[in-house]
Length: 369
Image 1 (cartoon, rainbow, N blue to C red):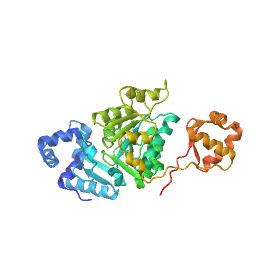
Image 2: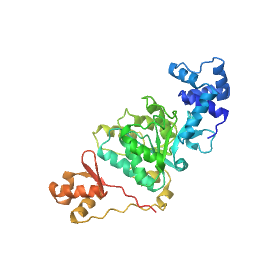
Image 3: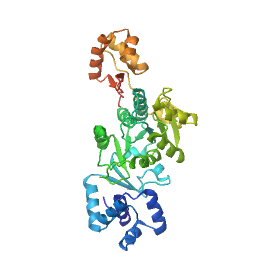
Image 4: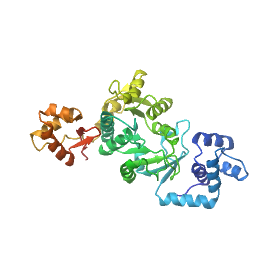
C-alpha cells in the first residue's frame, strides 16, 4: 500500500498515539501533518507526554516510516484516512473523528447501515441471549452490527451477527494485531478472516491500555446509525457510549431488564430519559426507518426438529424463551433426570446451547441462501 507524504506523517503521529482532537488542533494551526513533521525537526515539541515524545523521536526518519509501512503491508492491513472514499461517512462527521483507522477483514461491512449493541462485561443470561438474538436478526437483515469485542454483551453481539449471516465490526481498544481479551481470540480470528472487520484508531501493536476503551466508544457510536444498550450500570462503559451517541445525534435504544438488578439500571435510566424501548431486531429496524431490510431475502431461521417427543417439548418451550432446568421440567412435564440426557444430546447436535447459569436457549441457526 503506497502512502502520500501527508499520510506517512499521519502514521508517524498515530504511532505515538497523539489523540485525534490534538492532531485536529495542530493541523488547523499549521496546515498539514507534513508541517508538523518539519516543526518537530526544528525542535518544536508536539506533546508534553514523555512516552509519546520518545515514540515520535524513534519514528522521525524516512527509514523508520518505510519499515512501518512495509510491516503494515506484511500484516495485510487496510489503513483509512479521512480523505479516503472507504472511510466511513458517518464517522467522519463526528467532532474528533480518527485521523487514521487500521482495519483487518472484509471492508464491505463499512458500506452497510450499522447498529451498535453495547453493554456490561458481566451480563445476565437474559442479557446475553437478548444481545445475541437482536444481533442475529440484524445480521439476517444484512445490517452491520458494531461492538467492542469485550467479554459479555459485546461478544454476544458479535457472535449473534455472525450466526445471523451478517457482517460485524469490532472496534478495539488495542491495535488490530493484538487480540483482547484473550478468551475472545476465536471470535477475533473469525472476524479477521472474513466475518467482518477488526477496526482500531491505535497503532497495530498498541497494548489494551485502560484509557483506550472509553475513548474508543465514540468510534463505536460514530460508525452507527443507532445504538442498543442491553445491560449495564448507570456508571459504565455502556453509558459512556450512550452519551457519545446522543452527542453525535444517533438514535438510542434500550432493552428493558429485571427491576432491581444492577445490570438493568442503565437501560432503565435512559428509558426514563426518552430512549426507545426495543426487544427485537425488528423493533430496531422499524424505529430507524429501515423497514425495507426486513424484506431482504434472508430467510427467518427455522426451528430445529426434535427427534422424539421429549425433544419436541423442549424445543417448544425454548421457542418461547430461554430457561433453566427447573422451568424446563415444569414446561415439559419431565423430571430433571429425564431431561438432562436429552439436553446433552441436543447441545451436541447444535439444536440448543447452554449459557452461564445453566440457562438453555435455542441455538440460532440462520438459513443461508
